[in-house]
Image (cartoon, rainbow, N blue to C red; front, top):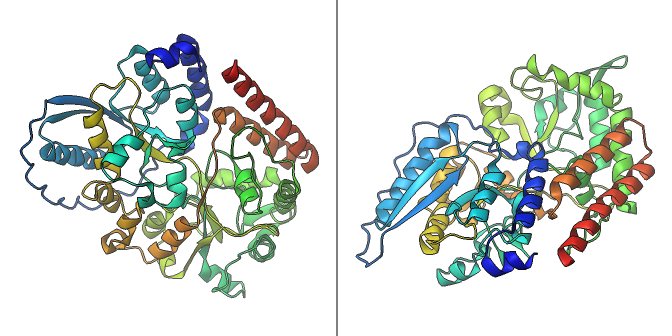
Amino acid sequence: MSTATRNNGRLSRRDFLRLSSLAGAGAALAACAQPPATPAPAEATKAPAPAAPKPAEQKPATIRFWHHWGGNRVPLMEDMVKRFQAKNPWITVEMTLQPWEQRLEKILTGVAAGNPPDVSMLGRQDLPAFVEDNALLALDDFMKQDSVGLDLFYPAEARGSQYNGKTYILPLPTGGALNILWTNKAWLKQAGLDPNKVPTTWAELTEVSQKLTIKDGKKLKKVGVNVTAVQGGIGWFVIWLYTNGGKYVTDDLKKITINTPEGLETMKWVADYVKNVTVGIEEVRAFYSQTGEWQNGPFYNLFEAMMINGSWEFFKIKDFAPDMVPNLGVSLIPHGPKGKSQGAAYGGWGYVIPRGVKETRAAWLLTKWLCVDKEAACWFMQEQKRPSPLKSCNEDPKTAEGNPYFKNITDIMAQDIWIPITPVQPKIEQIMSQMQEEVLFGRKTPEEGLKWGEAECQKLLDAYWAKKKA
């Protein structure tokens, strides 16, 4: 980090330009992390009336709050901010729905100019780069003062809120329950399989999918499951690697570790599955290009027996395929020979206080209200029928209303592990994506792909850390 950055609390021009370039490189890849559309909730439940504020001699403060919750979440945000101001009449919140484009650059520009938003929504996938360049305030002192512990959150959610042992972001919504195996158990029964025995290992998944996949020569008609369709910008290789006992980077974020026995086993399994179960990557892509014809997706229209997707899928299934609801399997994705079934948390949204904020106490109170206080944090997720990163919210029966599989989802969240994020993650993701493509299209063997991918990612990390050290 530059001396100028450390001395004046602002980004130097060099650091700002470098971080901006990372933000630009990650814009397209981060699109998958944009808050997903949710079915329009029923008319918002009237929130509990706030308790009358206690008299206090507080100097009036006005804070700016940036977020990205558009669509049917706008009235929810307005309601929460209105109630926050009623409880804290000395604070005025100027809330702005920011467009998705150049979301990171706008925060960085404000930090560099000494005029950032007081509270901003930020993807946890962007946290390391922002912290390395001194763009955020640590929240630990505020948390200690108000007795807010990270143990309030699921372990993987808490882990993703920290960098170098300090907390810089509070999570909302979840970054976990990201890859769940959703199974149409009625389809399994029709195929002569035990509907109550969903696959738990790679071998079982391969065997079951072979029986469920229907082909006409080399054309796919129906698919058991697409193992390359996972959630998280890091891609399918890393998600499956962690279910086989591997890691893609060391805990200190200095060394890439994909060219390993666990990595090779993972790459070979996916490549073999795509080639032998689903004909080949060209046909897989052609098959799934019909999504427009399927309107709401292949799983809901009985072209897929199983899908790998996040916790938000239940209410889409309920809307688009209600007859499927009584016969769903909701489970952890299968594991490889060297690992165990576990979920993965990667990225996810949260709220931060950028460096340079003047009204830090008011900014912290709003951050805590949005992410910890049940009147807001739990209510916001309950209105969307989604699980919360706060354990106590999910223990509230109201949160599970209308979802008979809610406990399955929260059990998966409890087993999630946090997948680390490097300060150069957008470029790491690009290399991982290219490595996957090279192997699936047969341009590189699994061995060659892993050797190339590890070397290219390592070059990026080495260059980054060398520059930070200089």
